[in-house]
Image (cartoon, rainbow, N blue to C red):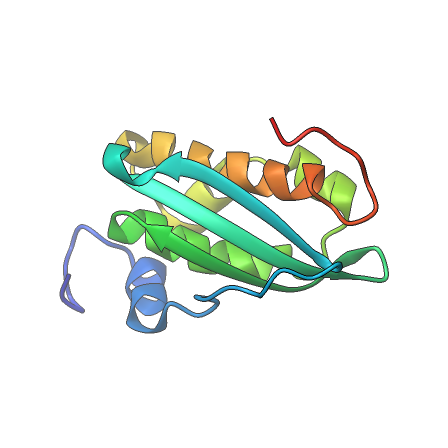
Length: 132
């Protein structure tokens, strides 16, 4: 991907330049994780969120996918900060699609983000929600 590639909007190009939020946290009692997708299918993400005072205080991602998917993962990290468990459980992928001007052909990839976010909500520290 080049900085002037017309297939990608300005926000996608900006996010791809740094991939802010990339990384992960070591397992700990205050860390909630969510995994979704499949590398062999073309897109996979692992979210790890530090939870404090009933909300996400920090978040990181490790992902594999196309530039739209990676940029959306980076964008998502900013969106998750300050979110409560109920907000994660209800989060919808369309928010990322709109913010990043993702083409309709890539919407299926963003559903993977939604699955990972909702998995974090199920794995919230101190809960006994299903991870299935």
